Image 1 (cartoon, helix red, strand yellow):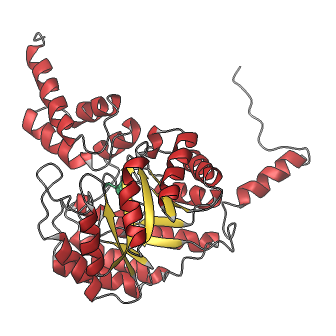
Image 2 (cartoon, helix red, strand yellow; image 1 turned 60 degrees about the vertical axis):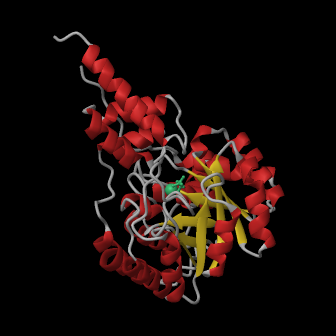
Image 3 (cartoon, helix red, strand yellow; image 1 turned 45 degrees about the vertical axis):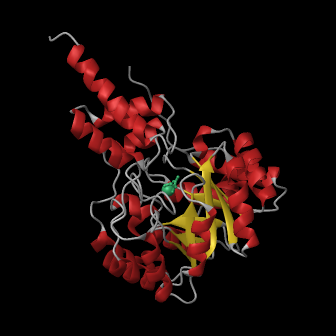
Length: 374
Ligand SMILES: C[C@H](O)CC(=O)C(=O)O
Ligand SMILES: [Mn+2]
């Protein structure tokens, strides 16, 4: 006899059930009314990965002007790997990033310009140059367990009067307690905002919430918390909502999601869903939707999408900007990109280890050549 399924409950809802309904309603329409956040658009920085660092001055002018028209308060412009990222290891820029920063500054007045800097790739002098061109927000990024290497850069940016942000990349690789402790180091250096960064797009909503709460705890709410989500598992918008619910107040997004891997949280979806949730962003939703379609989509060299390699990045916890490097290595050595990404994930490679991708691909190709046929 087949099983009989009961549909619906006949008893009155229990108090526990009522509490659950209330908690769930926080994530429904209007559920986060009264919360105000700062949206940061990173199309012209994280999006650089997705166009192989080939943004032109004209594209930057068009995107920056449309972001200002949509009232996005902060936009980030740099090489995908931050200031001075243009190199053989990370990918050469088509146009000098300082020309791109200048171009963005020329077409914006109300929008603050942000730059990203990874200590070791960029140096303090790069921040000075960017500031002279109009950048007022410095985002200093380290691997999530290496906050101490950002100390001099964070102090330098603060001393120069820049709004200073710490950016803890690959946050899925550290426990909430470790992320909290690392955020504390950045706060002690002078960061005013510290980000949970899901570089691999591997985190789930609860992972974000736990890390946001841990940072708030470890810093006694002395810094604002930011969220930078990638869409490799299709969760960037939901993860951003969960982070805001837990107390994050700076939120990154990119037009159409243009960014590494399957991209970032799409700006137009963040603006629209946040407005439905009651979260204030100050962004003109209609203008954000239009700029995504009319200005950003035409500059996309390739679609950002949850295709096989992108989902694998999230599944294996691999740094999003490794995608293009892995595609090249797969083609060069004739091995499946899936095998490369899974092995990179197994080795827990972190940003800066791009050369390991070639080593892994070469090793896989050698193993295949040595394997007995049949
Ligand atoms: C250098 C990285 O692309 C920074 C970033 O956006 C991330 O880790 O995610
Ligand atoms: Mn990113």
